[in-house]
Amino acid sequence: MPLVRISLPEGLSAETKTKVSQSVHNALMQEFHIPADDYFHVIEEVNKENLICPESYLGIDHTSSMIFVQITAAQGRTSEQKKALYAQIAQNISASTEIRKEDILIVLLENNRENWSFGNGEVQHFTHI
Image 1: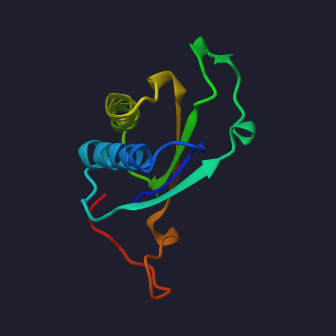
Image 2: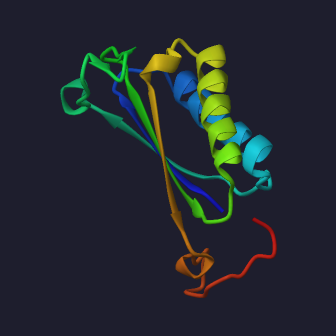
C-alpha cells in the first residue's frame, strides 16, 4: 500500500516520467510484494532551480538531473528488503532512462495500517504487507 511521490526536473519527456514511475512500481512489486494494482504515484516536475542538492555527498557525485523518490508505506519490511528495494529502484530507473544511479535519492517513510484510507472515508485493513 505505498504512496509514491517522485520529484524530478522539468523538461523530461512523458516517456521518461512514465518509465521512472514504472521502475519504482516494478521494484515495489518485486521487493515488497505489493499487488500490481496497488499503484498510487504523484509525479511532480520541479524547476531545476528548486531541486537543491550538493554536487557531492557521502562520496557520491550529483548532477542537476537529481530526482527524489519518496515512498510512504506501512511498516513491516526488513532492512534487507529495504536495501533490495533501493538497489532495484536505482537499477530499474538507470537501465530504462538516461538518469544516473547517482542522481536518485530515495526515502522510505513508514506508518501503521490504520493511517490509510483508500476511499469512502474508511480504514481498510489488509492481511498482506
